[in-house]
Length: 224
Ligand code: SF4
Image (cartoon, rainbow, N blue to C red):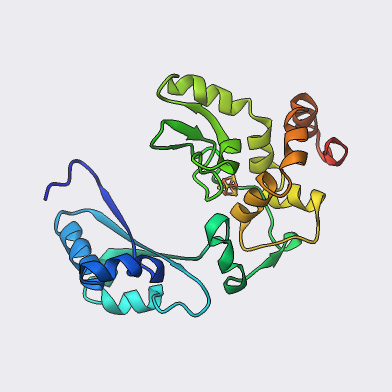
């Protein structure tokens, strides 16, 4: 096995992946991968997505990997209940929109997808292979250079709003303050699905949106 110049192995281990891992010797598969990566000097991140009542949690995995626990980074989060994972909604904590503060720090972490699409972020809702995810796409590296796409990103009023003005949850609150979400990516998902028409209307008023963004306290309520 060669590292091919990679510095990090990010491996997902949770109840959802166990369905597949069980076909290939279960957790032993993950244990072997982690040990081999550590032997190669890679940084290893073990990511776990959970719901209420999950068997595999980071606490459980710290036991499984206890002999190398101090060398492995663990990440754990509740599932984002969007798209086919929407059935998990009753199994994850939910928050009122007013309980979540601030813009989305991941806007600008441009993601490049297998078909060459570039999205404004790396979030759960920004999946270019879905109808709703296309709303986040700002170009395609197969037929444009990345610099052109990045310049387009800087002129994207929607992206600036998500980043700088209270995030998707504040925009969602303007449309329906009674919505509840598991995290801000679900707010984005609701915006581009349930409230898509309002979002399209807003995106057509780009100049006014930028003006509101640049003026301290400028409200966009009348643009929706
Ligand atoms: S909250 Fe929205 S903008 Fe931020 S990462 Fe999630 S999908 Fe992307």
